[in-house]
Image (cartoon, rainbow, N blue to C red):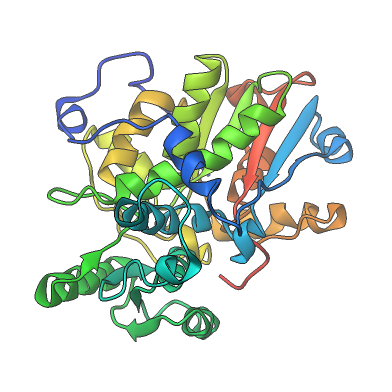
Length: 359
């Protein structure tokens, strides 16, 4: 476990991070306007669990339960599907349209993406709704069960690369060669498509803000490339200002954000494969990094075994999740209370980002 306070919180960003191009996103209104037109959409539960808060010695814990978002099993249903729906809306116009036109709105377009599982499901589901084709690249470390789920949504699956970054490179090369639309949940020099994916995640952050009568004192946000953490942190600052302490949690094996903050520049974090599969990303999304450098208070890394042990506290409360989905909770359970400013009156928000799937 390693905790790094963010030296740039409330201060100037280092030049290498400040120079990252892109528009900071914190307004969920464009996302919710699209979601209101989607019959599959409904807000997910925001649960207060007093017994769990008492066990942790804090005043309250609110858990945003994303395990059945739009029937896809994770928060990522909000990301790529939002982008594809936006693309379709540009063609269909602002008014609801006939189902047959909706189903063919993007016929002839192919979206290609790399995924550790859940992002690919969002791409596949969104493409199927609007008549597009989805091709998803998976690294060899992704369980076969995810490939089968993707195929069930009509996606074509290509397994290539030893880790996520290699599958991402392969997807980008295929998009360029075929003239397809690359739809990544990350951003890098020359590609900012991940910003719109990240914008989709603002919907769940807005649901949290609407469901709380009292602002939280802490948010613990798990991170892979950083999209979830960045969107939720940005909206938290928009609604609650400087009040909440925001702590970002990553695997020790993939501390891309923490290492980048320590270096004052984007870096690739080398390490072994993490069992927190959806968080096992060695390179940060540039826009997410910039957003979190502004908004996060600290970056925490946890070992796989620490997280797996910590989340054993969740199933007795009906909150079973994976190590990826429960990493934020593990951060709360394991962090030094004094260092985090936790007390018996703390009010904490956690995002349970996926169900209890294999890592």
